[in-house]
Amino acid sequence: MVKSGLEEHRFKEPSDVPRVSQYRLTAHLGSAFVLYSLFLWNALGVTYPAQQIKQVTAQAMKFRKLAHMTKGWVFITALSGALVAGLDAGLVYNSFPKMADRWIPSDLLAFSPTLRNFTENPTTVQFDHRIMVGLGISTLLLYVPTGLAALHQSGSLLTLSFAIWLTHELKHLKKIPK
Image (cartoon, rainbow, N blue to C red):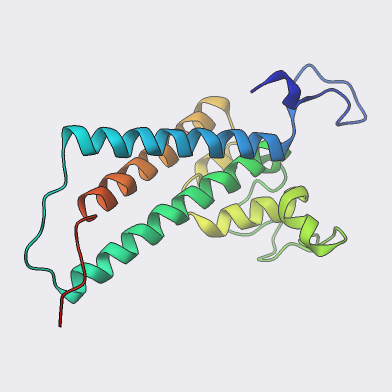
C-alpha cells in the first residue's frame, strides 16, 4: 500500500499496527484485480484462443450470461472484503451464522446518513460481506489470523481467475439467428 494511504491518527490510542483507509485499500485492491484480470484475459487470448462454436443453444447463452454475472459478483465480493480488512470488521462479530446471537445486528444501520454504514460501519461491512459469499467462515471464527486471511484473499483471486477463464472460453457465443 502506498504511503499516502497510511493513517496515523485513525484511532484514539497509539498502535504499532499500520492503519490504512478502507477506501484507499478498496481502490488499491480493485485496481490490482482489474489489472490482473486484463493481463489474464490477454494471456488466455494469446496462449489458448477461444474456439468458435458453431451450434449455440439458448441454454448456452443463459450460461454465458450467468458466467459474466458470477465474474462481476466475485469482483464486488472481493472489494467488500477490502472494506472488511480496512475497518478490521472481521474482529467485530466472531460468531457464525448469527452475529452476537442475532440474525440482524442491532447496530447494522447505526450511522447517519444511512449510506455511510455500507463503507464505514464495521458491523454493516461485515454483514454485507457475509451475505455475499459463504467462504471465510473459519477466518472469521478464528479472529482473522494473517495466514488464513491471506489464503481467503487468494481464494477470491483464484475464483475470479476461474470466472475470467470461463467467460473467455464463452466469448464467441453469439445469439442464434432466427
